[in-house]
Length: 64
Image (tube, rainbow, N blue to C red; front, side, top):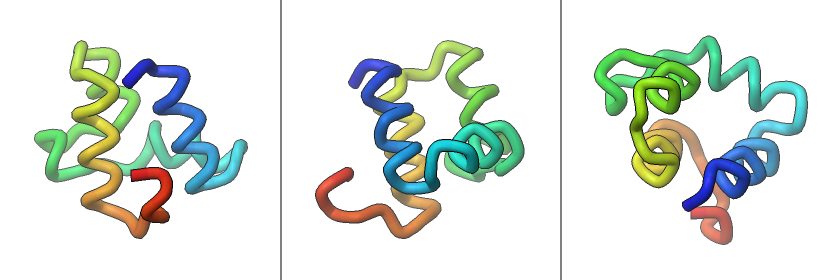
């Protein structure tokens, strides 16, 4: 998954404005206590980070 696709899915789930805020502020246990933004900056793949988001929130089946 490319990062552009990742952010497209984040915006589809959270809305355009809230997606960035959620990604910067919400700590995920599946990402070793990091935020989405931190995990991506650390080099985690967008696919791995997306899997953590899916495990944390109710994501529509079409976006999984």
